Length: 188
Image (cartoon, rainbow, N blue to C red; front, side, top):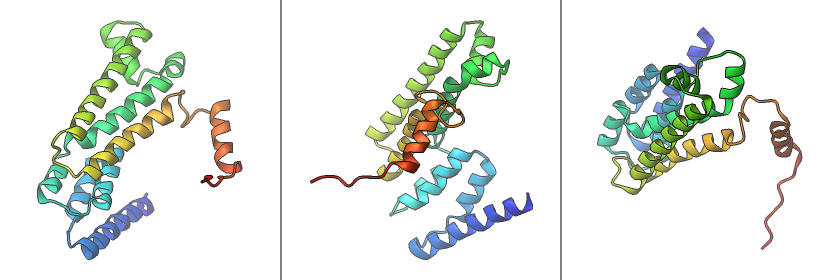
């Protein structure tokens, strides 16, 4: 564990050093707070903010400290898509630690109705993200687009089941296609 924490510490300090050298902004306090926040996807987005935004604004970095919703929403979407993809298998195994199972238990409803409720949560969160993208966001457009791309990634990963941890035929074909199929140049 000490080695893992040392690697994280060194990585954070290296990112902060590079940013200070290239952009003149000390981001170490923000990165440190993001690590203390302990959520992996928001941590990714905090790092991404400093990587994609060219003209860093003080008010944006202050909002990062408060963990503005635009940082949380992609994580919610990712978690909910994951739960939808794996819920049936987890319920069959007797596991009850996902949003579908929680809805079933707390509302006393079927798996089908719980799934619909989770899909509604996903849709509502997408609406909030799209509103942030189309409206006057406190954050740079590049960063908002990055957060949306993270949410899109979750949809791609889980729309045909749990392609992240599932060892089914579809997952096997996807992995093999990436490894064995050549990337052909576009014809002009």
